[in-house]
Length: 186
View 1 (cartoon, helix red, strand yellow):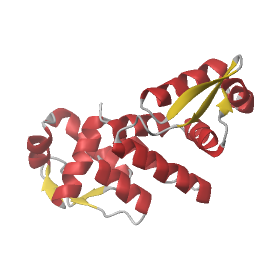
View 2: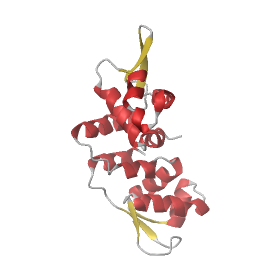
View 3: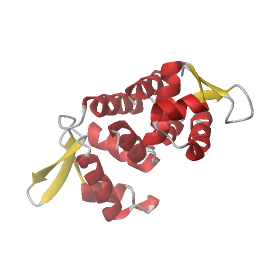
């Protein structure tokens, strides 16, 4: 799976995004039990927090450190791919500046690797037909309509007509720098 797509899939959930921010804001790391207590009202629980942190560890953006009999998670992008490490830094920096999460719809559009390739193909071409998208991305045309609609909903692309198969899809240059950079990393 594409590293950026996997990251977007993990961060599409606002609770997961908040956990990542807390890990990155804690200088000495965050204990899993503490995080689970913080998110009790959300219904996430200890196993949910632990599972999510392990997923982030697997893609290389956090690491475990032992502190006596406890396990703390700390920020770590040294094992992540360059694109994933850069994306995490941008996302966390953005979260520190403001809490506007309207850009999270982009995570939904980019969390599927096929959909991310579709967005990337349109972004690179500027304007492209559905047929050309399928050719450039090895995408099956029967699934393309759904993926195009997700990208349209995220306001990343726009069709010039109502017929999805004959429309020309245009890339909408996002005004948001974070979104622009995420799309370019796919």
